[in-house]
Length: 83
Image 1: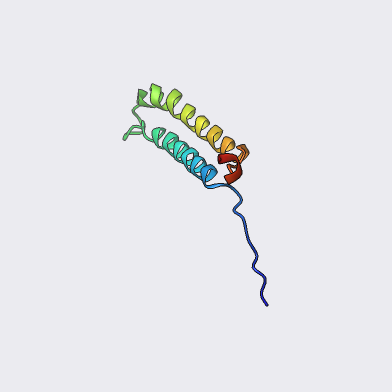
Image 2: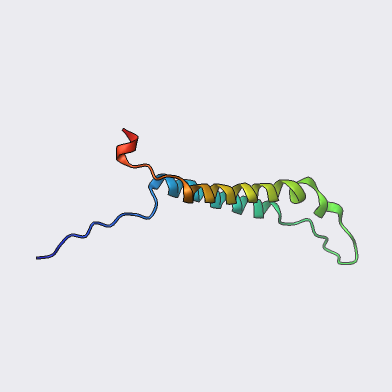
């Protein structure tokens, strides 16, 4: 006779959705940091110092990390608490 072992997921589906959202926010932040260089290494380009790369992108990355941390520490929703 085989005993059925019931396994539970580490996180709830709600937590996984939040985690994926956080990872996407981090990826978006790093994508926004791309570029701004010059094709000619002897020519300086001020494009690397614009608002998007200096303020917006790092803020989005930090928000993404905060979302991921929240998804880990959030109390899992169970069927008993949803009703």
